[in-house]
Length: 379
Ligand SMILES: [Fe+2]
Ligand SMILES: [Fe+2]
Image (tube, rainbow, N blue to C red; front, top):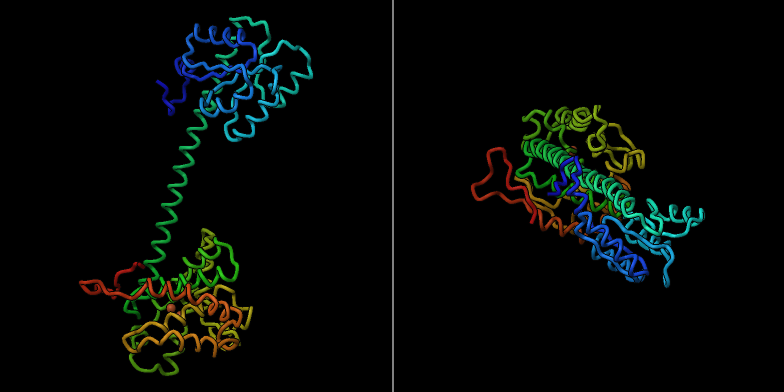
């Protein structure tokens, strides 16, 4: 029995091969069929009309085609060219049958994909020996292809598992930081999806948009380093406390910096953590960067972060209506925010509101889990 995972080809495997004969002389086709069947081959198909060869090939899926060169309607070279067109990945093994010893014909046949020649009139022993050899190579080739496909599939699965688990860790880490001052972790989910949409509207590649979506939830990771007395203070912060609060950008940037693995995700997350409180007019922190000196990812996240914070309720404040939040973005366009990005954000507002509606803050039936984390899924 043919075991596709075994590295050995048995003679039985070879005899299981399917062979298609295309020869306009019926007597030749029948002779080849007879020779092959007598030597144990079980699956031989023949046709005398080369125009039918392609259709039969597609239905029969032979391992080997024995192809006459001189035929009416379509010669062997043309048949090979057509086979090449339909079978780019696993080009079939083709052996040309010819009574023509002309070098030109042989070279053209080889250039068109023939693996070998069988000279007419046939020497039965030689024909079968050559076909056995070619099919042995063919079966080995099939087996290697099959094993490569399995390996490819396994590598893809492992890579996906690694990517998924890395993203999950990132999301959980972001939630850990977020739930220190938020009722739920939905804020990071929403703002990261808004960031994806805004990046997409700016014409960034899908890869960059996805990177931004996965990196942006870590924008406030630095809040881990802010004392509760400041982070959770109900009233206004005094000047000293505010300076400490502001340091979360740099703390976050430092936590995420120096990715030894050269991870694009961590590099982008670092940039966002550092720059999401920079302002277009240079009045932001920590470095007072101005205009396009602020990395695009920082400018995108600044808008999405503020819009979500404004339009959702917190224990100490009510959610603003969308119109009021949009007006706030407009009022701060060119001051806090990149004017081009504000315009784009307003252009894609219908998509933003869809995300907002599908990712509402919701406490689970049992209430939060003690960490202040509620259910984290969008409908
Ligand atoms: Fe922040
Ligand atoms: Fe935030």
